[in-house]
Length: 93
Image 1 (cartoon, rainbow, N blue to C red):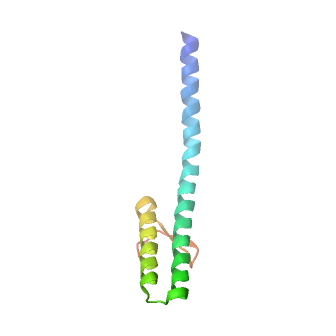
Image 2 (image 1 turned 180 degrees about the horizontal axis):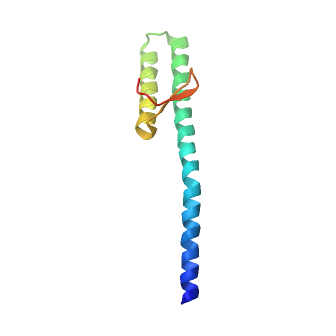
Image 3 (image 1 turned 90 degrees about the vertical axis):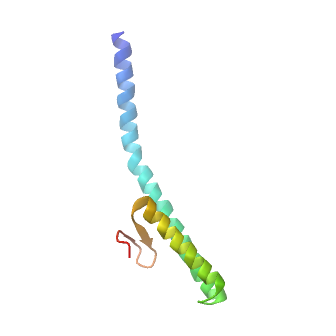
């Protein structure tokens, strides 16, 4: 019985260590995903402006998409990526 408890305790400790090691990596992946989403939306906006003009329907659609991507980052991480400055913002401006 004592061996079973030691084995169980060892497994629990191992799982806790693995979980603690995985959490920062998952958070980094979330930031990367968020950053890529915003960068893609920014690129699509620039493409729409070049192709259809600054005040076109397509450019306005891509502006909304960019806004939505930034809002999603804000909701998930309380940060948003600025592709022009290549940095994260923690203020909601």
